[in-house]
Image (cartoon, rainbow, N blue to C red; front, side, top):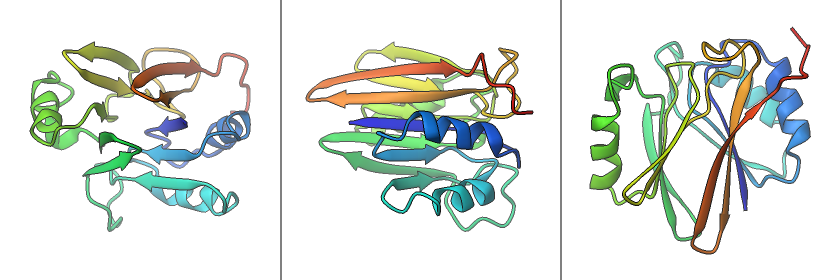
Length: 164
């Protein structure tokens, strides 16, 4: 199963729409905050897809929580914007929060810097920013492939995207 993960779109939709078109076979799309309003509008165009989201520090009026946990098959996923977990300092609090809930994947945003790591049974990913990344000159998003017990997390750089 393919999952696509976005974060920090901040009102800019074109790159996110292009990524969804690239990843039409994905079953689940997750937005990690700071752009929920446009994410929800875009996902209305894809009624057969499942989507999850959490509120970021700039999603002032969104009713969603800033951290949530859910299951894909037998894999528990923690997904958060990250500001309440102090992810700009380090990932220690995030890892503790994920492990306390027996999550196998911890997703976070907020930093606008993509990151993928594996730490003692925990897959950790920040997809970077789909609109204003701090680590690349192009938008980024994440993919997660779950096949049986195998989990593979990747960052996708939209190097040829020129939709700004």
